[in-house]
Image (cartoon, rainbow, N blue to C red; front, side):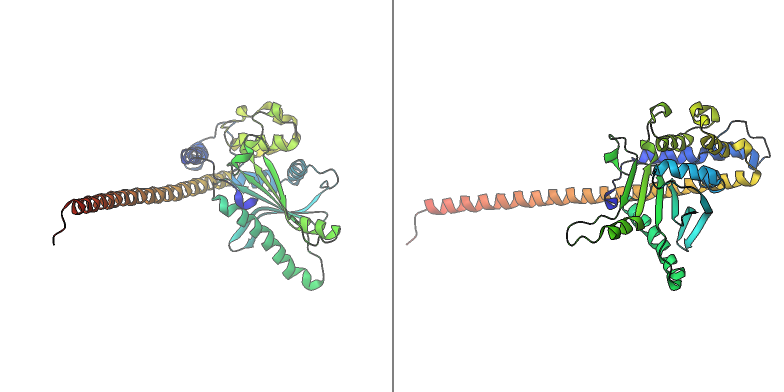
Length: 335
């Protein structure tokens, strides 16, 4: 199912998104980071910015605990406490997790924030790689000592739409795990263990309910808050209802630009600059692919016209042959 995610956002919308995400913070921070001026009170950075997201959830375990419990919403498997939180955890030279947390039960959860639009065909591969790498590291460290593998979950947040078919249903969260079909079905405990070892949640933030008043679940409120923060320039544009939840209020506070240190402001500016570069690179790649497709279509049109001309010439030749044969039939035979 993961491999059939569809591309839905047009190029123009991606271009405008890239521009707004990058220019908003860069312009607002220019006076504070370059000229030493003051940042206006109430300016808000996007919670989808990597540095802001990691500060709001990576440095505040209580926020992360509330967020994870609301997103998974499992009464029987409620997260009691978080033992350790790693920000920008490096799984390998080619793989960096945004947040990797270890629960008191030993379970690990990888939180991945994807703001830049990527190829849909790469999403499933990337998430599978995250799980595979996490388990391979455990194998190297734990199995040699006889310990069992610790189940790992992936919570992937997307700022863009990855599955157009979900738009009408309003289902912005999808859970995926291993499915066993037909054949000799193993014991139930084996099935349960297999499903535990591969558990992926995809969250399309843009498909959360349009307003806070329309949110019936805590997970929907978090989705709405995260997405709204990417479009709001000031704290006044955030629905006041979010502040009634102490964890959401703390998360919003982490995004307030006037409360950031100079180091945090510089990190935010770097994030937005990097995000803009990624967006522009992705847009350029798509445009190049579309140009190649247009060239191919033009070549197909030329080939069709040539084929039509050849067909017309062939038909004309056949007609001429038929005319000559008729003439030969009418002429008297020469003895």
